[in-house]
Length: 346
Image (cartoon, rainbow, N blue to C red; front, top):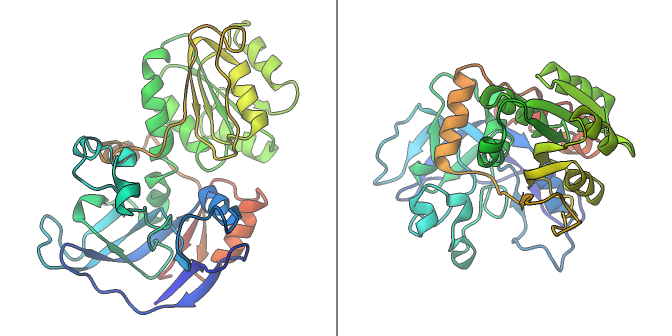
């Protein structure tokens, strides 16, 4: 089979040919219909040799969807021909977090060497993908795998962050979304579907601000040196009750802290390396800052239900497997409007 691999520290990903995988006991083999391209992959490929935690070569792709083509011994509850999405943050299945379906916070994954597909384990950017357990598969029930596959991360991650803030996002409140790209444009739709809050989107790109308005943002603000002042003006000087930073770099985390209202929830989702210092006279009183990671299995099921109801739709650009390296180049250059999706089987 053909696959996209990160093979050498500092090098661009390559399209290679590998043996077709076969399912062992308990495993499920998928023919991959779609695999998402994510900024997390770019962050991974920017790490130095000293800090890189995974063995190379690594098949990329932590967002995957496809069709079940073979079952290993003992697999129950799923059949060949089923169209499914893959839950990425896979855990041990036995610790207290996994028992709650919160495998994104598995307490033993690192100890046991369990990694998500594409982030340590072979990923979905290939013609076939082996999944270790059927519990990691969510049926699509008629959803298009191409437009749905980004929801396994770009939908699930903002949904997980937003759910935590729902008690604060009441009528009259404001939610700020920093970064209107792959995750941010989905977050705007989720906020509109789940809350009555006014949604303010910030980005450095006029094109992405146009996308933000198109998918439901009430207000858009250019993320420049006046951005915090503008958000304060829009909120009558009070700030926002929910702030979601999908960039996470030092300038945006500083912005997130500065626009947070009293008792606000701030979620730093992006991987830009920034942080929000919390303290008296540093943030508003009783601001809660979190760094959420991905989401639970039940939350993925809920996100897919929102997609079936038409409440959320990912804007995608599609590429062949051979075009995957170019898709990463476009993403790194900030030229992808929405989410890039690879079609490994055409």
